[in-house]
Length: 402
Image (cartoon, rainbow, N blue to C red; front, top):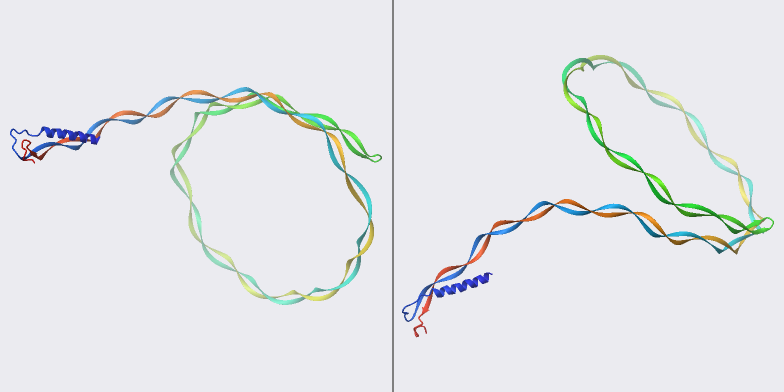
């Protein structure tokens, strides 16, 4: 932009220079100096008032649509897979250990105890008592009377009158509202599943050992307990708390300050000096003599008879019962229960959140445009006249400007 302005100013200056050349009536021969006025471009800074747009924040209210979730109860029928118990019979091979007892005679070595008497000598310490005379010091109490002076406080009564500030209670009744939760009981029907026991009997073979026939195969009935699922319905009381507002009269105690004159009796203690006589005990040391017994120990040798037990080895015969086990493979039929999956339709109550549009008013901040006039510094190219001296050659003369 600045280059274009400069070019335009230069073209205008050239045109003005051409227009400002003087016209000679009779141009003289030779060159001469001519003073000319040319327009020179110059940059000037100007202050200009410009309209501009500014934004300021404003608080406004607008309506906004929000969605609120409302719970809704629905009944849905679904396919579910239930495991149903199914009975079947299978043959199982099992191994049992059959015991067999036999008697074995062995020769064993046993230790037979034999007692004998042994005489031993040992050292003992025998106490020997003797009397020794010794001196000891005791303190004998000696009582004496001493006169001393002491100070006692004698109480005296004195009555004082003074004014005191007391708080007097003032009772009044004020109405007060409070909230209570009142229980409301409703009957609700609930479905639940229970397992009902079903008892049946199955036959199985077992081995019984009889004293006459020995081992005999017999059949016995064994009770088998199975459980069957049943759907039941019961009515259950449901208690919910409902909030209620009640009003009651409450006694309120306020306190007022009052001035009261009180007569107070105080007791003052006056110190008084008195004399008394008291007994003082002092101790005087005395030396006394006493006899006491002293125990000395004397070593003596004595004989004691002890019984000592010794063991003698003997060979004896002993009969043992030895039980041996051998395995046998047997088979039996057992009833088993397996769970077979079955598909059934089940109706269930579910809670679905439904979106409900709600229109609310919100406070928001918006930017509002407004027109403002400001002073702006602008640069502008201005043509300024300037006088310059130029040497001009006469064109009619052919010899002066060669």
